[in-house]
Length: 187
Image 1 (spheres, one colour):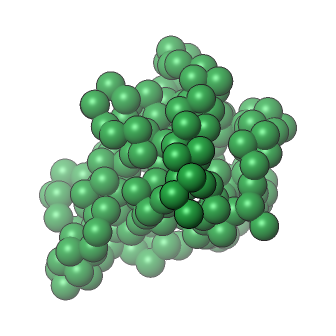
Image 2 (tube, helix red, strand yellow):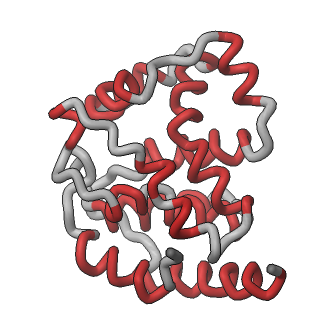
Image 3 (cartoon, one colour):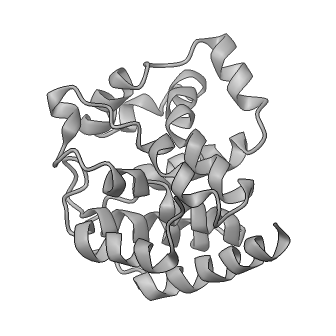
């Protein structure tokens, strides 16, 4: 079953006020901040859309606030994909799918990265399989959209600032509406 754009707005309107896993922002604030950081970096619209939607799985598979404290990995990076696949192409979907593995990879290839993770990100890293080995990191980096996923992951980590000004939900919904219409016209 596909989500509609109206369904996505409804998810953010209904559940976007939930705290973002032990961070000082809500789910909606985190999504808006991640997308805004992507836009500020000059990312392609597809990657901005991925940044906005990357944690939608949390809103579809509600596990309460900070499920990692209870040892739960909600597999959010996969959960939303079947619902989004009819709406978007791989340039949007793959960075979403890969953003958790991007954290695992960055911990392996960037000596300073792990120390910058929040408490919840460290806790979720363990639940998500831990730091990649050198071989796993190399295999990850060879995947299509791996670089986009690494960029998304870095914006994700920075998108936890209370009261940061961002464009509105409507701004990003307009962007994804255009991408979705374009995708549907090609399939």
